Length: 519
Ligand code: SF4
Image (cartoon, rainbow, N blue to C red; front, side, top):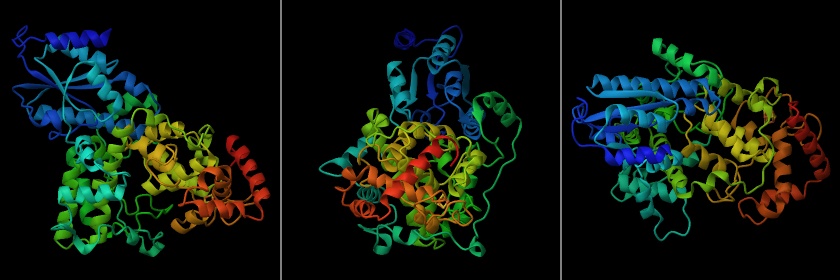
């Protein structure tokens, strides 16, 4: 087979000059490792190393990507190749049917003395690299390698994010005052849960945009037949320089206000209090240590309050790294878990939201169509929450999110959807299901005013689907969740509802309308 052929070829690669080609090693760079400081690239030199980047047709055509996501990745890859060439490297930017085929053709043409890669960021890519016999170098793209995570796991019965976060703060010496946290508190989350700001207090500056050029047009020509959504508007930078500019912009203009409204949602402000740096971190255009160092510096210089600096840094060294390690700990079986046996197909409204009368869903889904992005609370508490209480298949939701978001990657989508948002892992990641009704959406957003549904109603045609399905969810799963101390109260409250039968009849009607595109 092809894999064995490549493996044998790699084993037999000569250490001599071949057909007049300088016998260099090849560093195989994946599309989410676009940084000179990552793994095998860190020590690569133009006179001893050649770079291989493969744009696989099968990969691009394997899904219906959001056009901005496909463009962001491909344009970033092509620009990174140019930057490496400018730095003196010979770059084989190879268009191939598959990754395997690309590697085979590269070896045939260049006969490298060896091929090395940095540990890839997905289970499938790591399996491929190992199957092909490619030597892999430990990745430093994250701050806590799974080997280090094992130290955290040692002797612990439960693995809580907060404990991991403190472990990270100490070992990385971030916001520390000796052995104690700066400000004498580890976590300022309590101060970061305000609802949306009043309209006249909406002071968040608009994100910067970049002008698109010929390379962007070329990429769009190549990806448009496999994609959907509104074409790029320059919202997402596709170079390291552009990513650094966004990071500095965030540090100076938004970090001082970060935190307080990070869980709030406004139909009129999609970027509210968010850094928008995740796409760059997830592709390697930014490294977590430089983002954390920049935020810490702003705090040390007295330009941002501790609650903002801590709230932001927690997302980077805590949550992001925790999720990364959960992925490696539990894959591959984890991706297929469905403990609540949720079997409803992903409703049409996810791909065609214009007709829905649910103002919150429409706003968030139209935003995804426009920008390939919505922020974490919109993902968790609108789209994720709705999918959970409506019993939508978690694998279909993961696929949709993976295809739709500019910052998506399997390592981030699988634990966040299967674990955090859908409770499909039966509580391995989160101790409770993140189910909420219309009251939560109303408190944290401006969506409910003017919605066709009434967030207070749980019976009748205009009853809010979030409110109805929230109660119905706890009734459907009462046996399981009545034993969970974190949500037992909600189950008992659902059991005691005087209009329980009418509510369940309304839920049946909502499901019927949902499945028929009429909700
Ligand atoms: Fe969403 Fe219900 Fe509020 Fe409408 S009333 S915006 S459906 S939560």
